[in-house]
Image (cartoon, rainbow, N blue to C red):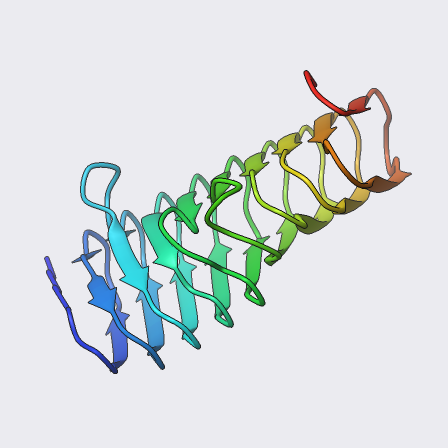
Length: 230
């Protein structure tokens, strides 16, 4: 087992593991962080639901790869404007939980999540409260079946882009707060359950949905756009 606890101003860390049951715990505050983590194997973790990996700072570049099955990450991005996040998972039954912008701005940030070569993976994504985070862009790419995305954005100018290939995927998203929410979804597969709820009290909601049914049909799609109460 590995335990890493870090609290510095500027940090360069590269951690690579080649077996299962490796654990990484991170607490970091400051600007200019460059963080690279590679975990290869099964049942590896970065943070837990009760002790999340925590980062906070501007102009961060963070790249995390988990290759294998039943790996997990639980992270809180307290504040991270002008930050680039990339998280990639390869395998089955992986779990990722992110809380973004809980105590500060994430304006100008970009988050890319890629899940390939596996099924039954879970992403829980919560971005901010509308008073503390603005204008971040998120991209989700999934290749596989029976995956579950639950994405909630409570900030000004939520932008989500999804590219999902596979069947029986379950996707739920909620965008609230004011000013120009947008979601673009490209789906290939069948028997998917998709729920999109957008609430904007002052400006514009946009949902672009491209659905391609390859090898089957039977998908359920629910889109609600309203000023309140979605």
